[in-house]
Image 1: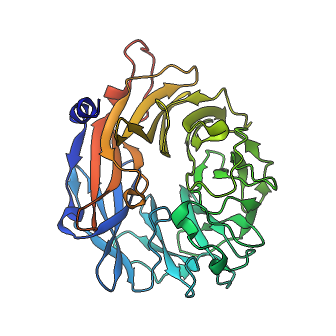
Image 2: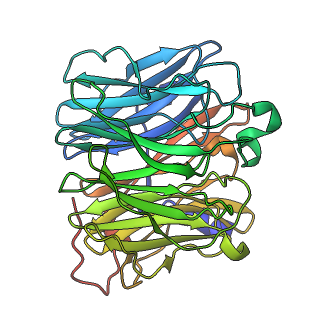
Length: 413
């Protein structure tokens, strides 16, 4: 079975090369697409410095790599990584910088640029000065700037000595207090707007996801954390100026005492949204997807995507009002693979595509998938035998994802 899957990877799925291939020890890649350009960011490391770089694909050609920023005190982590986004001629990027000697004491910094101008001096995103964890950033651009959400540990007690393994065993809990979810707007000049508390108690180290609707509202997806340690995915809608709706839950009832480090993915198409997430409630690891209207958050019937015993690490692209393409990691035989599939609100599915062989090791990070024009792009990190890493970028046409028996599928290019 693994051999057959490895053969199927070459069917319509191509490996791309670019400026990142000339570098050694590249990691934590990310993708962002606007109408005209595909942006690709990554971190390159040497014995002293970390460099956040990016390149853009335009007219089927990759620009020369550019350095966004660099530092010798950055926090580099398989699950918590830099973000990049663009709107018209403006760009924003974030990175994580250590604030103290603790294992998970670091701050979020952002930088912006316009056109061919240089990146502005980095600014700390959050207003507090606590020596705690701040990270897991999500960004969505709008016509007035960039909406940014993040996990914020200012209410926690920075007592890492009580957590022997931290993120390394998938459990990152502080002795008292709770991780919070906060947000702000960064305008195109790089100025910070009002800071807003979205949720005062959330899971400590699951990625967040955001989307920006046509009526200037953010929809935020994240893993909550109840007083009883139920950690289901929650949705809220609002903005930093006007506040947030009550949370809508996936209602998996996943009771787990530690963070699973497995966040959700969300996308918006007009007045509709799609949500993908991982859960292991009732000891059944699975990847699920549901749909909702934007104005009235109410999730449709849950649809399972994986073939069994999923690892998770989901991403999602919505391609029509009631359909989306979901990617995830799952084991097949003795190997792990990144897979993707089209699905609609009715539960109908397209061909199951195997994108790449991967590994459940943390060093492989979280695959990121975007839609750009007629294609889908997915980037991931691959471990090398010498303990370094390299980036793998795959591309394939959307058309191979669509089911033949459904003729009215509208694909958003």
